[in-house]
Figure 1 (cartoon, rainbow, N blue to C red):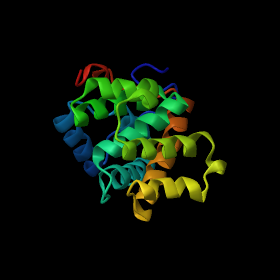
Figure 2 (cartoon, one colour):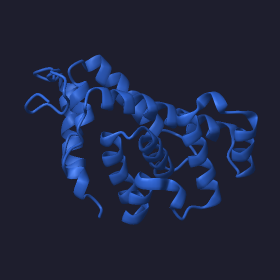
Figure 3 (cartoon, rainbow, N blue to C red):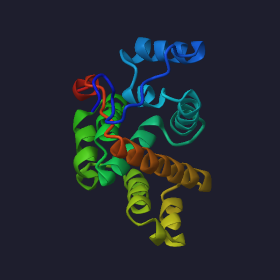
Length: 189
């Protein structure tokens, strides 16, 4: 890994950052106490950074009947299947923060199947894992299980979209040896 870069790739940030990007990073620093390394990594190409943040913000913060916690739980179980160190660390911290339950965050990272979850949440996570492990095996029966738990077709779209996004980002993070900010490790324990 190159010194002071959050990945094994030598892709330094644009310097200086465009004013809008610098403002976004300043807001992250103010609200989170850090600029997440994923953002710093993408900042070698501002168009790629903007595309990434736009998709992330839409899926994780945009309109959905899925709660922010549910979306973060999907991120963690998908990342567990993919063994993505960056996302397990960052999104595990988010689950701990949003749930107020450090045990839940750790359980999802290790094995969501042993977590004490409502059947509806378990069905959502089972779908996300199946979509990650064997997408070609998703059938109408899988969607029907979600509908039986009360998920709408829009919810199913959102579950699939979040799972799909994290499958992509897990692969980019692993391929570049992206490292999480150290601060994530100690948060909300």
